[in-house]
Image 1 (cartoon, rainbow, N blue to C red):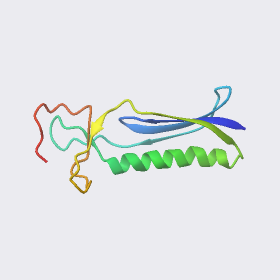
Image 2 (cartoon, rainbow, N blue to C red; image 1 turned 180 degrees about the vertical axis):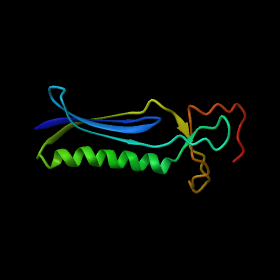
Image 3 (cartoon, rainbow, N blue to C red; image 1 turned 90 degrees about the vertical axis):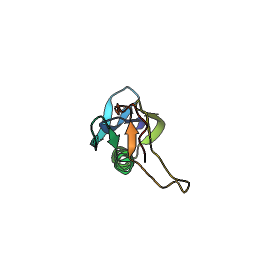
Length: 110
């Protein structure tokens, strides 16, 4: 069986799904993660948790279909949110992912 794979990295979870060529859902996986609010009006997420959700949701859907000796034809990724992670010159993380829902208007000192 041939199938298509889609992944959406969202604000509250990462969703992975596989469809057959007629558009029927074959398998899906949804892994959630929290929005962190360390201070009033701050909205952040842990990038390691998000990456883990991406990896595990891909594995969950693809492994289930590989066991059926299926053939993956196409992959689509989406992410409607935007965010920023401050890093130092060694690319060490200085902040969590500051997401679109953060309403702080002043520059935060890291």
